[in-house]
Length: 101
Image 1 (cartoon, rainbow, N blue to C red):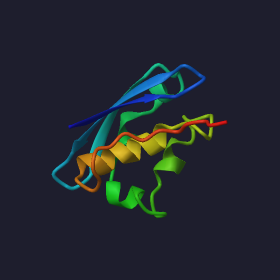
Image 2 (image 1 turned 135 degrees about the vertical axis):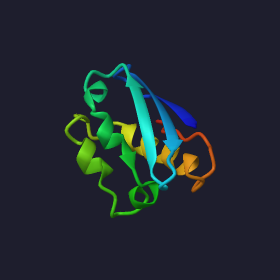
Image 3 (image 1 turned 30 degrees about the vertical axis):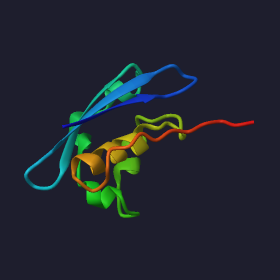
């Protein structure tokens, strides 16, 4: 299992994501979020093929758009990063966005 925590920034919400690899090469994510929109996501949307989501053929953005009301929300990026790591397609390494002046 791969676990990540997303600090969403100025909104103050936090999301915990656990991703588990399935025998059919898909992954399933369990999301726990303090964001009221993200906590409404149905679990059936959270089983997907991480290889497809790494490419432009991925559909996760479209499927989750109804629940992500702010386009710069880090959820989909974090979810795909965790799925890649769980599937052995990427190494586990923290990523971040920093504002510099």
